[in-house]
Length: 199
Image (cartoon, rainbow, N blue to C red; front, side, top):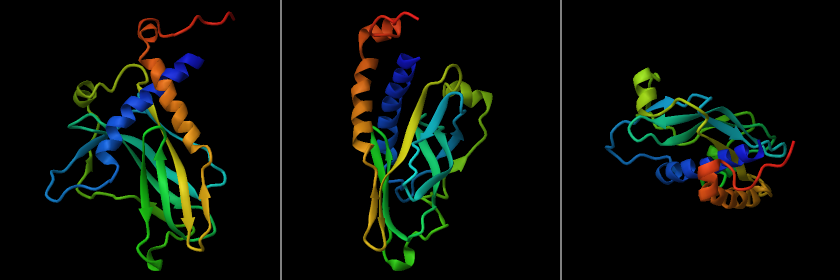
């Protein structure tokens, strides 16, 4: 089970590298064609949110989307300020890969307690039904293909204080190191790089 979990994390790295290079900014160039997405079946790809009791931000309506044209995965989520202070900036991380940030231009745009925020929502994008044809073309069937780990990296409050996730760098380093296991020929052939311990 431990090796299976390790391989799942490895696949996360492979997937997220392709995703975030195209979506880190969350913005579309003027005049660019509309993008269509399907919602990733949860038995094929799963968003995993790190438990962070001290973080003032809470992920809501979290799921993965698949670009119909490219097959790339992207995270889709909204954030709630569950804290007691206005927020002027924050950074969200896709562990082991990339980050996405937000900052208020002025005090009138502070992220207030109890409010919900959507990052760089593009109204030209469209979510379409996952038909059997699309499922086959996008290879969205069979065993679980990966997960995407999301977490709050840092938060800056309006009063100058902040929140910082101390385990973020360690998690990223761990996922990078685990990626080497996936590239080990022994793993590709047998699914394990070492003998399994006796039960």
